[in-house]
Image 1 (cartoon, helix red, strand yellow):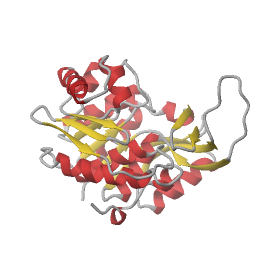
Image 2 (cartoon, one colour):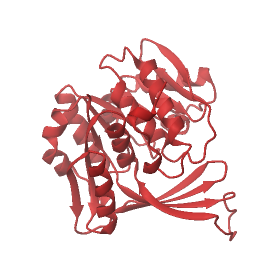
Image 3 (tube, rainbow, N blue to C red):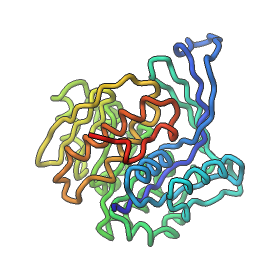
Length: 302
């Protein structure tokens, strides 16, 4: 069983279902409203937990009812929550998600306690990072904490997976160089590299640029089409499983969590790990909500 550590955000999601996105200045009714657990970090940690890894999560929450709700979910699934810290000055993060009938979504985020994750939190959790096989991080917590965590990982031969989302062009060079695998979607890849990702040739170019910047390997997720990889030695594309999408909110997070549970240290099974991750994502998009949609390992049949 893989030992995976996820550093990232914890949010409570408010999901607003609409027929279509409103136009600027338009008032329109919603079809439905719901609340569920979310946050890219929490989603990826739950995906890794449910899909076969021994998972520890480094995060911050508020001292509030939303935190109790989230921690109950984490513990129920068997996640190690020893390094989730309760803030005394900020509330649990929140995300407001507008979902169209076709499954597309737009997300607005209140960081809350997530913005307080610090290098000191990483120092307190360094033993669990040192003991891991893989460390995963995204950009919904401060960059200094991510850099600190990746330094601990690299000093202890722990594989690192960087999900550069939400997208930013201001990624520290040292962080990319410490990333064994960087996993952007096509929009994020374009923002980082300046190369518009529209076809296989542009995927090759964008991945090549990321490798030049120092990443060890690249995976570009391309929504319902599938996912592309470049290990520096080989490239390929793994097709998605065709399903009717209801809500794509946790698709990318499910992919990364699932992928981390199967990938070998030498990436020798990268297509098999990506196929498993694509399958898990295809299951997730068929259910509304983020964490409630993440499947368990026994539900993912290739």
